[in-house]
Amino acid sequence: MKKYAVLAMSALLAAGCAAAPTSAAGAQLTPTVSTATLKALVACPDLPGLPTARCGQITVPRDRAQPAKGTIRVSFALVPHTDTSRPGLGTIVPNPGGPGTSTIDLSGELFAEALTPLLDRRDLLLIDPRGVGRSSALSCPALNGPTRVFEPLAKQRQLIGECGAQLGDTRSDYATTAVADDVDAVRATLGLDRLDLLGISYGTYLMPTYAQRFPEHVRTVSLAGAYAVNEDPTGAVGAAAFRRAIGLVCARTKKCDGDEVLDDLAALLKRLRAEPESVDVRFTNKNHTIALDEWQLTSVAGRVFSNKPDTGATLALVNAAAAARHGDLGPVREVVRTSLLAQAEIYSYGPLALSDAQSWATSCHDYPRAFDYADPIAERTGDYEASLAKLDDADFAPFSARAWTTRADYDTGACLNWPEDASARPPFEVGATLPDVPVLVLSGDLDANTPSASGRAAAAQFPRATFREIAGAGHTPASTPQGADAIVRFIRDAHR
Image 1 (cartoon, rainbow, N blue to C red):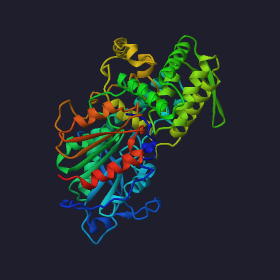
Image 2 (tube, one colour; image 1 turned 120 degrees about the horizontal axis):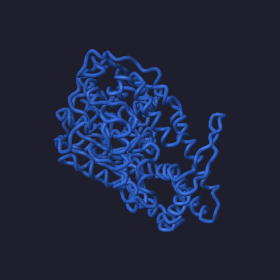
Image 3 (tube, rainbow, N blue to C red; image 1 turned 90 degrees about the vertical axis):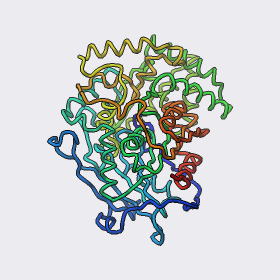
Image 4 (cartoon, one colour; image 1 turned 45 degrees about the horizontal axis):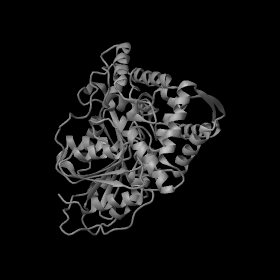
């Protein structure tokens, strides 16, 4: 789901994949960008890793329902297909996740490298979503820099709310529907017909939204690390995936026992719930004293299976929990320190790569909530607390329900202080019709962010979808050779 768990989709497909034939018997030609349109675009000298790319931008309404609110810039980079001796076979449009992640500068080269086997006959169209990267990057003083990473839960919620207030009446302009409409505006500008959509993490939320709004312009949909638009993957399903992932790592490495690890974590979390400790973290010459409590450790543990698999990080958590059983919290502090420093580096990128402001503007607008923005914050909080009280801790073991559902960056109460927004709602309703096109959904068996259960729900949104679980993959499976190869072959071979 969110946030920057994949950091440009965990170096999406960085392992690459085996070259495969790029034509298939009976393949239907889908026009690519015309020569005249391509010449009208400009070179991209600041993208040396994409030497053939041509850049452009369009101006779109900030709010298509309220033209008086002004306009916003949407930028794109087109990597044209390399075999000009034959007609093109279409255009691939990827999104790396987030929300709030740049497609062009943070992920463009990775997409181009991973999809190389397809790019002799297909164009690659990289579009920065509104509010990040080259598309009128969005920021707010409350969320500038990495400071939020070191704050406790209540303070983080406060800062997110302050950002919403600082954005004023523009805070409703970053809905996923608006991003999807921007994608279609770029498509129309370039004279394209149908697109091969590729979504990673949040991209698996964006691409179904585009498909639902513009079904006639979709050839295929590939989703990796997926979740359904109207289902929340941050609850017990993620905790169950965490338990499964611990067991799988222990069985595969033969360096731990899954049940013992979960028992150790449960005991440690119970201890920190009753008697929080502290940990010192030094970042950019500044010291931060962090509360080492149940919430902080749950946040750290959740990150272990919310990114590209890292056996070393998993075993460090395992060993730290075992050491704590014997009274030694030193390894636990080091695991927490390492995790926080990594997060701080990510949040230091700034809105030209990662926009925290855009991320929350989208999330607080689109994602499900257990409260109503029309209510005062005290009433919202009461409704939210009532929803937490209905959860059973046993479903979230070794964590408590509260700790898991409020962990950093996946906090279901993150938007409690967000200003009122009457337009806030999901991109489409439950049961909305999505196009009958070929769809591939990939999930990793080590993903506790958007686990396989969420991937199956994402596949079920479409009339014709293939679900595949990738062994040894985390969030997202596109970062494995098996997942990368599956996506390439699917786009290459799909027919409509």
